[in-house]
Image (cartoon, rainbow, N blue to C red; front, side, top):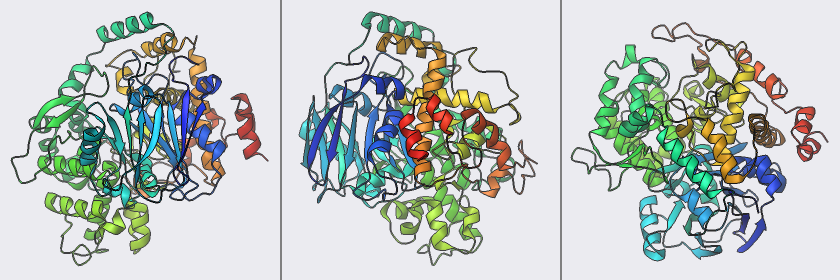
Length: 615
């Protein structure tokens, strides 16, 4: 068995009610690490191309990394993987909390589901033993109640990943939730879970993760804790919601469905900034063994909006998508929107984007109050935003159309509404502007999962790793972005939270030391880059086999067509080919199709993929 992993995967056929364990190959662990690296390899090998992502032949996985649950700082992450019903291609969704570590403590590095159950079920794991149990009494419950009921049934130490009513109703923006506020939100994989009638994964675990050098790993953690950077204090005080004002100031945050600016449309955006949210925070919250604890639990509501007990603090993405993006400056409505999304199990980025889409369609006369059951979807109207959100999560009225995201909604509404659907490849754009954000622009259109701010190519890496480049242009940025993307893939696949290794938080050198002490591998930067490239090529190969050609296409607005006239990003207009060409060349991918070249695959040791793509 390799160190850092439990060495077992579980395969569950829900239709046949069969469970099968398989040993995890140590060579595969080193080459694909875990998370979406391992997930992509397994699903590529075992799932036929062209399957319906909501059908019985589609696979859905929950996968940890080799540093998840270990002494590595930030080792709290897990990833949901499968074919995305939003994009039709590779889908993954990363989340923190406790469920990732406890999956390993329960004896498994990964669980893959196939088939469709006749009735609602949940998977119960107890220290290496797994069984399928009836969840009929849980179907229809929100994610908070689902966790509470399962803990009453199996003990207070139980950890749960589950879907809410949005996942049950197959909203293509549905998320998988854990710890009542941590979301594997992107790619619509909550809908895949709902299509399988799989309500939850519940785990009791106390098994020990094998480590190569326990004392060295503990010493590494202690040194890292004593060497955390100055940004830690800021993140401990505010969390990501403290970012809104700085992002809005440089025109990185969305305003008016990405058509406006803070200066021109919402000069009072500071009214929903971090201090106003923290004023209503009751206590801080942290993922498994996290020294930063950037999350928070809110005080009981005393105002117009009555969020439930244990409501989580909104993250920056939620704060921006339900705040500045809608020109809403009511803090309570943003907290309420976050709580609704968490309880129903829906991606806050997607939900906020589709509400903004509806507001612009209303402004343009594409939809009217008759279509919205009397809700006047005017910019800045916080009551209208919450009323529409409640329709979306319940799939009521026009919410039934909007619940599948902006791309599907635009297709159904027609009348030129696609111009206002701020999505890339079916995935809603997160709260960071690609006009001026060169790294975001490359990632949004070039990565296997479109529209992801966590793949900007500017993620943490040890000093001396990245060649110098001009951050104000795409020229010369291809190779640096390739290196940054490779490190991002490795971090994600290893099960780490990137914040813990970013500039100002901690030193990226500890990442390599964590790998060495926990796994025993004599890993180098060169190996990390090659492994990260392999993981990305594996995800991209899945897309190619599904007939997807990249780069993904931007909405004209997000290319600066027409350009902004005011603010820090005024006058910016980009050509799509300028954004991605150098990056694809550095990756060894075809610049016309995004297909990894045969020689690239062979150099990465992916002969089985080359045979599949180059028959």
